[in-house]
Image (cartoon, rainbow, N blue to C red; front, side):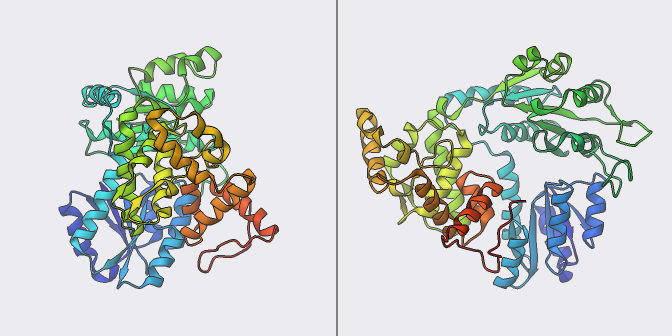
Length: 465
């Protein structure tokens, strides 16, 4: 765990640093936003930022976002002012920690970040077989290709492998090749010199250099353009990279992991992926089974996510009703573990008491619409094994029959937004849609005269840009 503390924290910096060090973190300290950005641009790296709210937290988070530096920020400040905490969370901070620092609280925050990044929850024999293989190959330096459908937990597996490797105490750096435009991905991977292209306002160390000594994950590598694949192949073969606009080759020492939700051998046959790069990456292959092929994990995962989101939202949930477990087991889970997580997050917010019942479960199809609203006949075809689940689901759908899909979707979105106190980002995550899609729909509802909940102080004007 690499912790970067930004600001003086009103003299509590030494205490906070000592607490973090005692929890096993590597701690660095800078005085302000510019110094923090300089350190991150130059490859210092961090897994978590503790930020003094006396500084400009909005500027810090905006700069991180604009430069595609994905590090969670925890705001820190004197006292427990609700207004200060809300302002920091609205700016984009993950948590607010009051000062003077509480040893247990800071240790819990650090543990939560570490656990969330590398925890694997499983019980099914199919996953046990994959984990056994992962444990065998993790200590080596071999490149590993991790495949599986979207939402199966490929990045979590990559972090697990790193945590059980001999590089565990070195950086783990992840790059989502599908999320970064082609013209920026080269700079993201290999870095650039100041002025090498429009927008290169300062020298920036790339992910290869930042991961030096540790592990580099190329997430969804099948989305990488063939032109960039050639440069990547050279970096893997020679362990040397060239910054964009640079003149001096830079040596790197990394262990490379890659993920893909596509059949890379098929992509090679189509000419979309270089065969020599495929064989370089595919020294070892791990395929994660879809959630529908590991039914033994559904209950343990649903319990894990229920506990996680109940604690995060300050809601008391004691258990999940047996009929709900049957409903979850009967679902196809096209979105895999990520879909199950969103379902249980919604359930925690919609639960009417301390037990999650069928009324809190909204199983989604491909477009965020309750499956029950699209398939009201499902109960009629239920088998005896899941008859209780079908009856429970039918009770939920009875109020939806006769309504349009658009109306059901609108009410689901509005209700979720109300539960999130108008926070659009949280609502979009729960609904499983992008923030852009949510804003477009809210803009439409607003134009139709439908009251749209807004977060405290948030503008009612909508932008789709």
